[in-house]
Image 1 (cartoon, rainbow, N blue to C red):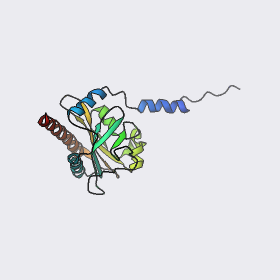
Image 2 (spheres, one colour; image 1 turned 135 degrees about the vertical axis):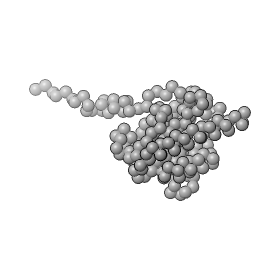
Image 3 (tube, rainbow, N blue to C red; image 1 turned 60 degrees about the vertical axis):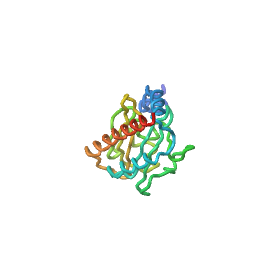
Length: 204
């Protein structure tokens, strides 16, 4: 009897194919973004003002964590601003899974290490009131590692059209962010971009 051919959706090849479909496409703005971040004076270092911004973002939206996240290159996303409501102070160590010379601030730019890469590629805000309802995001490593169940994020798009990164809020419980949450994070993203560009003009 002839062997039954494997089902097209089974085996390691199918897993690779599915992962390929879910990976963010090539980012055409990588080089332009890196140059723009340097022009704005944004580096891989904690920023007290951005930590304070993240704190305000968390308070205004009701999330337990908030961040200001810049995409430094093709491989790294860096949280120049970071806040944890559990301590009610900006965090400097960050979740234990985030290991880098700058502890707690750097994550790989990878589909399995955060949701912000999707926001950068979409160039639009993303609202996930309960991540478990979205199979594409529910299996993300940070969901279990940090214990988050909801996400709210918006891109930081500068006046030249470059997506510098994101601002985001997450919570350990499902959150009804709703239209108010969406409008809040979009407005704060625009406000932050304006501040960054204004600061750069003053330095030049």
